[in-house]
Image 1: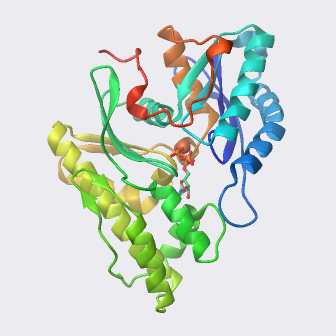
Image 2 (image 1 turned 135 degrees about the horizontal axis):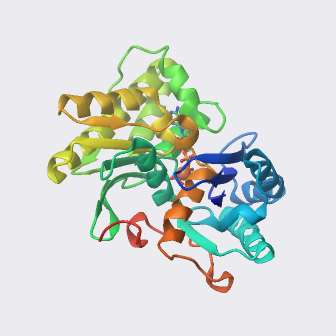
Length: 328
Ligand code: ATP
Ligand code: FE2
């Protein structure tokens, strides 16, 4: 039997159908790309409302199953943009009611972590979750995913997106900056902002734009930003490894698509004698399969929610949600 998962926390509307061993049976996604500037929550929500019904159909067709094969409907309850979350939650409630299936709430950040963990085959790794709105170093401990370090201002992906848009590009900025950075080689000095196991990016954004105004071209700027920002993430990950006495690291979140970040973290981990795993890109960015898989874990542990109390939680934190599927 399978779980159907709905993702709609920000830019991407996605429906995934996943089997008992995290095999993706069906996945249908569509990313909202604003013509210019950043994401407007209501426009993204309209995109999700329009597309989700068709994505549900496509995912079921791809899996070759009907509603009778679905055990439960999982949805991303938070964190995320309120209107976007509500779009996905509404579709999930309608499916749960009309198919008479249980509804399972899933935390989006925990879902990034769980899909990366199951694909890694590692039981209890340290996790570097680097995405649009979040940047966290996470380890499991005593009933919760514990955030050992995180961004003190914006998520690294939002920082990259904002920079790229300010440089004249369009959302999403991370993949475009990655291509641009491959043409760069001159390292410009930028604020390296590590505070214990936390990081901050807004000073780097201001400094990078100032360098650009002084004539530093996009390739060198992108190269310098990637070098500095990913070195900061590599440093806090190494510090967390040392403190927690772990040897393996799993990457998750959209920024984990980045080859430079992957190779910097891999080098650090392997020099310490450990292993690094990063999922395929489709499982790093927002997708319904990660919601479905985490829904599977939650459902099997008895975690369901009545439709009446399934309100979305735009600020729900990684370390505040129960994870009864992991040993206490
Ligand atoms: P969160 O999980 O914090 O809610 P999100 O849901 O908005 O974030 P994800 O799909 O997990 O987003 O990640 C999207 C982010 O990943 C965007 O900021 C995008 O620019 C960034 N990103 C995607 N590919 C790359 C890449 N190759 N290099 C760097 N950043 C990337
Ligand atoms: Fe995400």
